[in-house]
Length: 495
Image (cartoon, rainbow, N blue to C red; front, side, top):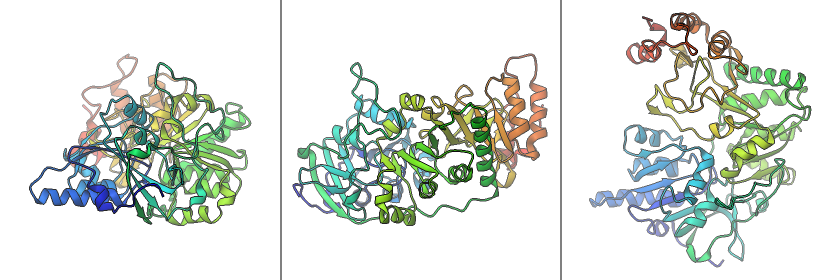
């Protein structure tokens, strides 16, 4: 090996107070683990001495406990971007201990290259192998790794032996040229390979290699329940009808699916439907259900930025890698989420909402408009540019005291102009070609929970004053106010 082997603690010593650190990987997999944990220990030691120690943290997306958890608990993060999903980081953000700014995931690498986010002092990336020429085989994700490796002053590599070197070839690493010299990205099917399987780095930047065998420890997914199963069935039924009616081409179109149990349920329902031909994925995150559908022949190929699989499912892929190696491809999120490609390929986008208002505006990020949940992620990258943009959510939350369908979204991430279909366990609201009043009627009738349907009808009636978009400024957020004051949105009183 041409690089020096160092300990995690020695690697952490290269990260100074005030540094901006770029983290490779995406969606809590393929991220470095030992060095960020050592940085957290260093921060705690410095704080005990009375010294300031905080870093800026730029990642591809969510990370595990060794990064977002340990660093936030150590109070070692000055700012954080983009998407995150760890409860300790979330709490630090909502307590204003960490300055968080949300970004579309397709923008992160680009913003780094444009120097919008300042200088990257240190990049920390995970590798499955390092070639004799110093090129890197990445592990189970890509994220913004090529960009931070190119832009950082120093690079630290975690060589993780829990991933086999045989996955060389799974990755397709490509960065667009900056304007005004940018050309089209030459991907015309999800299978098209346009970049390198290996990450080439400037060896003079590599300060050392830390050897690990740490696992990502992605938990097994919660079994599908009645609500998520019904949402999945509703999405599948809608797409089957669109396919039969010739709206979706007979060959079908690539799917993008968000992260979580609803996404797994939707893919499971689609996979069980023999009326839908075998299809491909052009998505961010490749989850457990994708692997199962590949084995049954229902998914032919999946392009994404991460293999976010449970431990047992990842072991299954590695054990039968000869079967999977020509069916999986991992790319930078700047490519997987690129609007040009989403529109060209005709991707059908299926994402999850926190709440949806009666006009089709979607809140994906902020509880009651102010408390950050996780971030916008890539949902809007796909929604605005997709062939069909579908948002799913259960009609109620917290045992029914919160309605996901509200008069006005308390925060908007994807506006009504980007949202074509809303699906809950109650039904499907097709918003295409409808005026605001028609959208409201369709969403209330088809997607609202029975406990809230009459409440929402009453709001719409009192708001209709011959306006294009009926709205009562006095009442628009009263359901949120009722929850804040009484703990139950059903206690709303219109005025």
